[in-house]
Structure formats: C-alpha cells, structure tokens
Image (cartoon, rainbow, N blue to C red; front, side):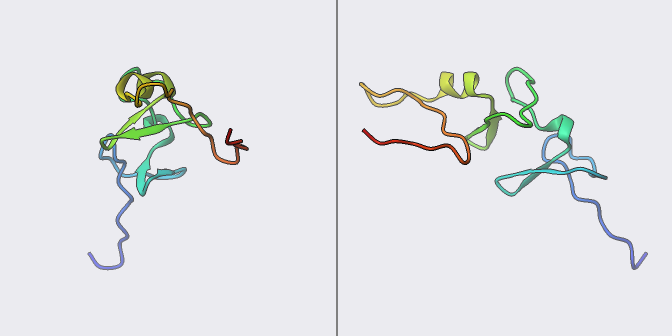
Length: 85
C-alpha cells in the first residue's frame, strides 16, 4: 500500500512508537521503555549511560566502569558546570 508511513521502532520492545518518542544516541524508545537494562529504573529526566550499546542508570553504570587507579567515575549531566582542578 503506497502512501503509508512506517512508525518509528522502539529500540527496546521493537514495537512501533505512536506519540511521544525518547531519543538517545540515535536510538528511539517509548517513554516507558527508556529504562536501565539492569534494574528497570525509568531514565526519563535522569542521567543515563550507554556502555557497550546497553542503557544504564548511574548506579549500574558505575558497577561496569573501572576507572584508572586514583580516579573516580563522575556523572556529568547536560548543562552542568564542570570545574577542572
């Protein structure tokens, strides 16, 4: 059928998205599907992290990232002011 438009596909559930779309790193999600791959915490209006193409909350991202000795993992949010010391 010509003239029909395909719905954008949710990265998590693979269903078509009608209405509000959450976009992160060129991936699209239903608002309710935009969640941590470990704990299911909804990440809308929160910090989120991509590690090896998986989406995580700050707590679970820190569990996966091992910084060099003497350094800590620090979350930097959009529009945050960062001071280098």
